[in-house]
Image (cartoon, rainbow, N blue to C red):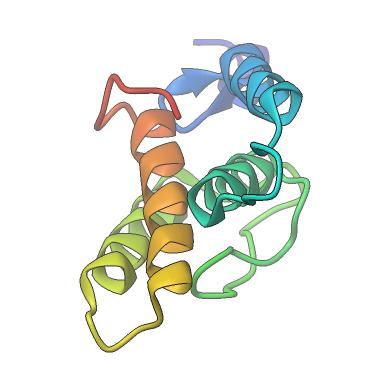
Length: 116
């Protein structure tokens, strides 16, 4: 694998695939009068994975480099999002936000074929 091939990947997906998923989700938008915490979580997950946000959406840890988080960080954030989503002590909206982050990062890491 060349260095260009390595830098054009985000987790297990190509940078183009993740950019496309983000653009699609941004285009869809919220339903009128009902913002979706899960959709916002997915958007933030994609943006962080692409290096557009410095802090992780759930743990607020910093990405390992200017291009975004490394695969290990992506996996750790996905797991943290799953834990937050399942924690019944957490507010429902925060749990749904965490589910969105989890779903986006699970897809980025190829742990799921379902693209949010």
